Amino acid sequence: MATVKDMTTGNPTKLIVGFAIPMIFGNLFQQLYSMVDSIVVGRGVGVEALASVGAASYLDWLVLGILMGITQGFSILISQRFGAGDAMGLRKALTMAVLSALGLMVVMSVIAQLLTRPLLELLRTPENTIDGACLYIRIIFAGIPIIVAYNLLSAILRALGNSRTPLIAMIIAALINVALDLLFVMQLGWGIAGVAIATVIAQVCSCLVCLKALLGIDLIRPEKQDWKPDFKVIGDLFRLGIPVAFQNGIIAAGGLIMQYVINGFGFIFVAGITAGNKLYGLLEQAGVSVGNAVATYAGQNLGAGKLKRIRLGVRRASMVSIGISLVIMALMFLLGRAIMMLYVSGDAATTGQVVDVGVQYLRVMSIMLPILYMLFIYRSALQGMGNTVIPMYSGIVELIMRVCMALLLSYWLGQNGIYFAEVSAWLGAEVLLMISYYRSMRKLEDKACLDT
Image 1 (tube, rainbow, N blue to C red):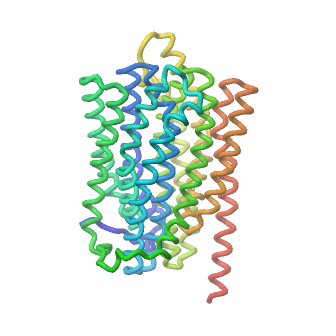
Image 2 (tube, rainbow, N blue to C red; image 1 turned 30 degrees about the vertical axis):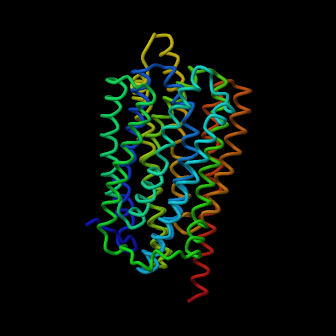
Image 3 (cartoon, rainbow, N blue to C red; image 1 turned 180 degrees about the vertical axis):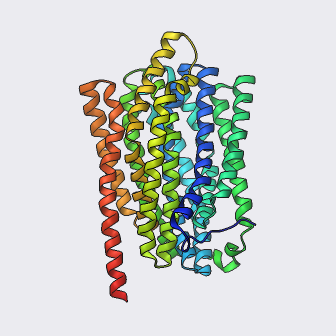
């Protein structure tokens, strides 16, 4: 039987770190198979194919971010009802989340397939990479129902305090993905299509692991009446989910504009940024995981009315996050170039240029990693407390900063300006989130005093 975890009692540091550790490993395994995709493509197919995958990456994140945002928002209501001990409300929130996700699968699948080619053309995707990018992303989007199902199931498990099962699911998926990458690309010669197919199959396996775990939890086993549509609960779910999805969407929209600018510097620069971003995806996972732990922690404690525990938990999580980010920064300066060399093969001149781009980009990102980690903490705390609007506004700030800096700095500094556009977006968003978190806590505490 899968376990759940009550985070309303006990040592906050131990709870948050204990919850985050399985998520860190799970996210690392998720990034592992993304890295393997890029390594297999870069070394097994070529730099041009790596650029094709990179050209599709922000479009992939746009759709994935929207889907993850919706399901993450759904889980906020579930965690709050679990923290409040409302078993009936918990089951109703869960069943309505499932029904809502079914509709979401259909709508997003159709939209994503229709817009793939036009968006890639709009982004000035280089002529020698656009066909490969289109093929890759269409196969990935064919798996949208699986993406929705996995993200919803894993979000529900985490809302109940179970971060272990998503870890197991991701380990299994990563191993399967690596094996299938090697088979489909290196042995069968399927190229970019083989990498995309391997990813979809791996996601199916992770989804099944999470589903099996949820079916074993008696607490959330729905009864027949729980499936009766409740439009108030559905409205509450989307009230929480849509701002998170919009936040992710506008962040990804900024990324698309970044990709537009990046594409203008040619496929070697695109390949270098792609390689750097794949490794950067590993760097941020500890911050993402601690942030997700804070969201569950804050949601459960808000449901239990324990505001002081939320403040304490956020402080402890901040200290942990900053410490981790400094260690990662040092490791990237020591090992970044050696790892980057794994991504590419071919003539020395081309691979050298690609690696130089990736390393320079990675070092700038690493230096500013503490800012990104604190952004995750404040954003997740607000979301866990039911405030998904301010994080949405922070996404707008990110969009404005990212676009303005990408356009202005690339004009003044050329391709070097791209390296600083991303971190400028983090800084602007973090300032807004930090101020909003402390104001929200003060309002909740003042309301609690008046109620007593």
